[in-house]
Image 1 (tube, rainbow, N blue to C red):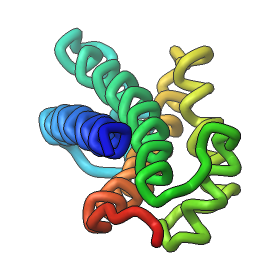
Image 2: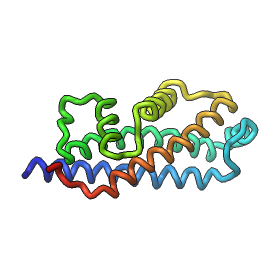
Image 3: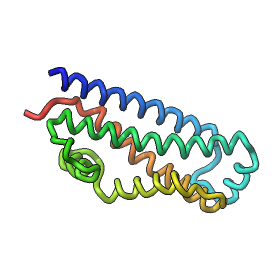
Length: 160
């Protein structure tokens, strides 16, 4: 029983972390303003303003942190469902989550990870590339939010 309570506490802690990253990500998008999708010209104008560059950096950072937290949250969600996560790879967890009804699949998860890896290692300096990455983040953010909301809605109950 103690292990279950600890697992639920971890799940909830990662949920709160997700909420913080999401709140700050949404704030950064709001402060950035302007029409979407972002264009090369819009990004060029943003890059000329240090306060706007800080918002762009915040968007990239919060998206990456949100995805990392969501991956950890998914592990605990599955654990609370009675799944043997100790021996599962991340892709195994994604596939099992999909089988249990969460709105995620292997292809989508790989695309999300690929975007996150690009952000971590190759954040571009060219306005056209930055616009493309930011537009991908905006779309991917909604995927992460749907998965997060689905896990939150699901009232955690151990498998019978």
